Image (cartoon, rainbow, N blue to C red; front, side):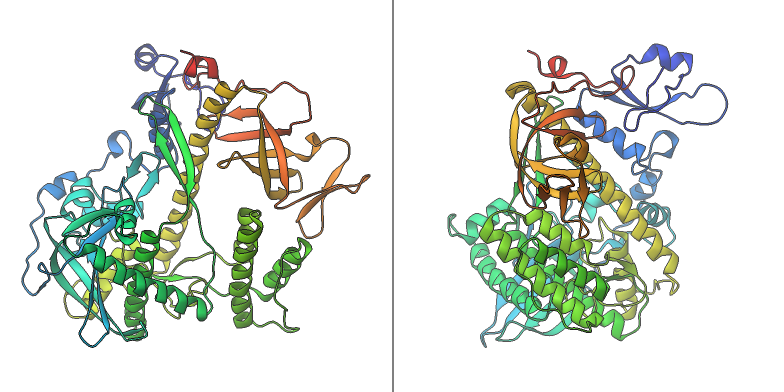
Length: 579
């Protein structure tokens, strides 16, 4: 028998061969439905190894092929001809670098920055020319369109394109000639974009920099013998001004934190942490935004078919409610006009985001809860064939252009741009409504799966911590979210769990009108967003990544049993970490 792993359910009887071949600790994929007992389509390995669990999750959510569905485009990749260099601008003598995380395997973008004699600055943003390899309507293109995006989970990537393209032929690897679509940006003395041109090029990346290495060069902690550090300093100056200009025109100021995992190499999760956004990442991000805006303006001005990245202005009533909620939490808010228009609402949202960032930085609390409130008041960014602007960036035209190795909308923008410039005859179908809807839905599915993978990894790490510290360990935390039935809390820096209101004790708690506090009906006691809280783990489900909490003062034994036995059973703490 096989027991469903991620979501539970009724055990499934496997065919007799599979039942004999795999034991109770193996993770396998089967196709449900049809007659007879289903055979095993794929074997992932032991259910006690996090790598196996994450590989199975990608298949479970339909983000990785399995069995006969395994990528059938590899043979097409093997027969691809190297694109011609004819007509390309030769930039191989230009100093170009990539800047990416330590674990990056595919490199979409590289930058070059030069200060000219008149004091102005020129920036080249080189983007992998995926369109030169992936032709419209080919098997490669159909597969990429179906996948939509690359999916990333800790220690693993399910690429949109076959590895021979994503990690080799298209990837801007150092010391190799690579074909690109380059956006050349000329900045005036105030470091504003004065002119932008796009063309096909051939480049040779001089150095592959990690964020850590770039940080050392920017800080002057590493010797700069080839001019890379000097170029990064100039790039940082440009990026800082770009960010300042964007905020002046009304861009949101919400700093996102990404969690980084370390797998221990033995099937477990060794550590997790939220890292502050490095200056090197900000540098790259700002230059990519500038290139995306330049391309989007050209596509919009020439009415070329493309998928724009749109973020529509918020509803005025959503911003009015946001200010009321923040004011109820004693967070300073700007005055709200009596008759708020959508454009005023967008500007107000940007100002509020700045005030929230300042307030949480000074008080050192509420950063996650209050920033989430701002995001909840806004509309969700998506893809659309119409240029509806990007309120979050305060941009009149924006598209995704800089990551065609891992995002299909970027590849479509490349094709449309190249056709519009007369550099290709591969036109894009002007009716992109269905494509826009499909990739937007796919993006959400992948984002949800990536978050689920992070929750699972955190649950594994938490189980390890509890085995080491004791299952009655208490943790300082902070309330990050509220619903009618209880509260969510971040604790021990990286973990998050749910505390049911019924387990608070001493009163009957209800959510207040603004959804910023749980209030006791008898005592009036309040549990507000951003408040400190001391919790312990009452139940941990490593299969789903769900964590249940209790207040520490409650003297009740934790339930650490997890869920499930049989073919998809997770070992208990003593089994996995007992030595």
